[in-house]
Length: 116
Image 1: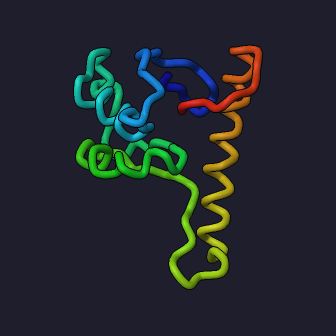
Image 2: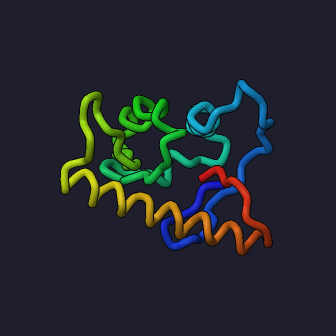
């Protein structure tokens, strides 16, 4: 499903099998590559897509479309904590992801892992 930050469901695409060949990033790359629901027409330069870490392999595809990708920060090797800016940015992304996940849980009626 493609959902806005307010919880509005824009598109439901799939189903995709839950096997080793379908990661979040591969599914997103396929959705954008096939563009069956004209998703590319909804997108504009400098749009921001908020994703979790499972989508990190889609950065190139999104950047080619002019979309900025925001996801929780990773600690760099040897780094014990994030900078203040990284921590605040990561909290904001996590909060938005949580709000969307909460919407899905109430929509589905049961908490479980959700593909955003």
